[in-house]
Amino acid sequence: MVLAASYPFLEVFWTMLVFFAFVVWIWILFVVLGDIFRRHDTSGFAKVLWIIFIIVLPYLGVFIYLIAEQKGMAERAQKRSKEAQAHFEDYVQSVAPKSDPAEQINKAKALLDSGSITQEEFERLKQSALASA
Image (cartoon, rainbow, N blue to C red):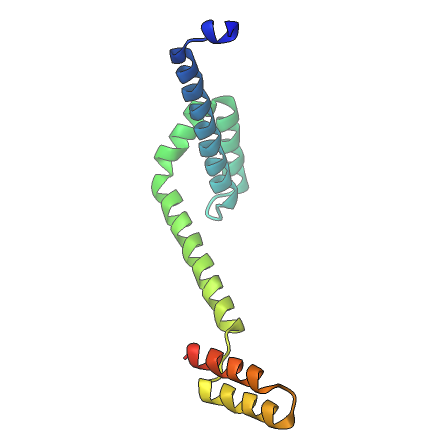
């Protein structure tokens, strides 16, 4: 109880606010450093200069980078997002079944006729083929 009396609510609130600001600062720093390292339109020398500027003057360096490269950062992030979406769609197309439901049902019927599957499994396969149509 002594600790609570010597640490009033406003100081707790201020500590939480400072901690939150620090976490946001670290997040912004990682975003900027990530953007610097992912850039393909600048030379390695320019990247080194930006990193030195950010290390020597952390707040000023990050804020100047954000102001100077805001449009480029947004365009690069949008391009990476579109590439990731296209990669995901290509993956989905590669693993999705390419046959129509009638063909899937015919294959299941052939398996049923050969005795490889039971009537219950055939019905389940038929329902899944019709549901994917």
